[in-house]
Amino acid sequence: MDLSTIILYAVALVLLVVSVIKDKEKTKKAVKKGWMAFINIVPVLVPLFLVVGIVLSVLTPQTIEQVLGQDTGIFGVIIGMLVGSIAFMPPFVTYPLGAELLDNGAGYPQVAAFMTTLMAVGLVYWVAETKYFGRKAVVLRNSLAFIASGVVALVVWGVMV
Image (cartoon, rainbow, N blue to C red; front, side, top):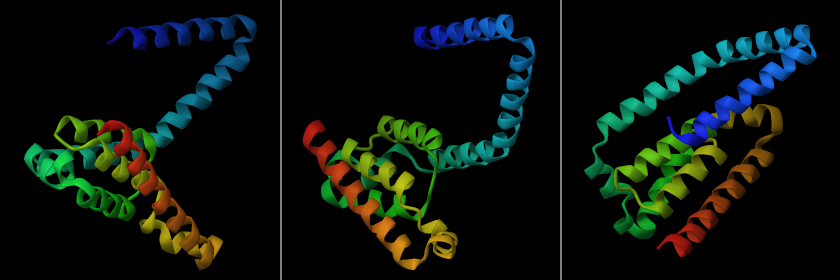
């Protein structure tokens, strides 16, 4: 554990003690709600982490470098954007995945393109979104998110390369 993690846990513990002192019943109710929220999210988290683990064990660092490496240039950015657009993952899964990709040889602009489309463009939810928001809104949202992801990749490229 690094120092920032220890500090975060210490602050949380101190605040919990303060909360117990201030109102024991409200604290008990809040801890119970938090625990139930945790229990409800575990079935979502475990499969996501399993998928990320399996993907990273199947994809070798050499494969990642060939597809999303710094030398792949704009082609790697486009591949990252296309792959990211197909799937959808929440940030708490996407960020660790991005860090692993970088550790395995992927380039910053390529990972930025992949991560932003992974969180912003959701083609897997197209049918559900169309049902609730209409086709025009879904096309507009996904198109703007895709374009914004490209802009993010270009900015990262300008800063990091």
